[in-house]
Length: 73
Image (cartoon, rainbow, N blue to C red; front, side, top):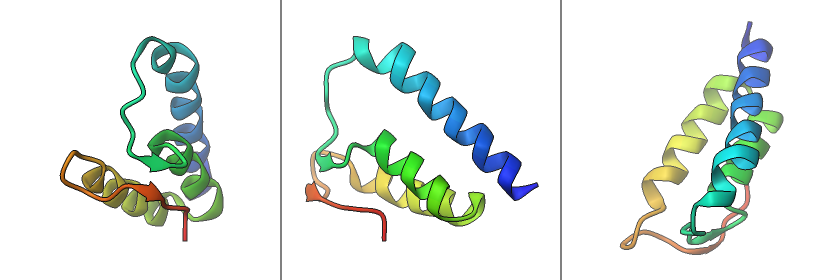
């Protein structure tokens, strides 16, 4: 079940990156971008651990948050 959720999450991120992201300005303060980070987190960890890492990253990605190189642990 966990693997199916990860695959579904990766599919949604790829859809976002190909259909929505090209029309938006780049606003992510990190490298890799938040969407790439999310895909890597779901590929490396389970859906639930990956989701936790993604949420943590998204909360840090704001004008007052961190910036720079921030790879998936």
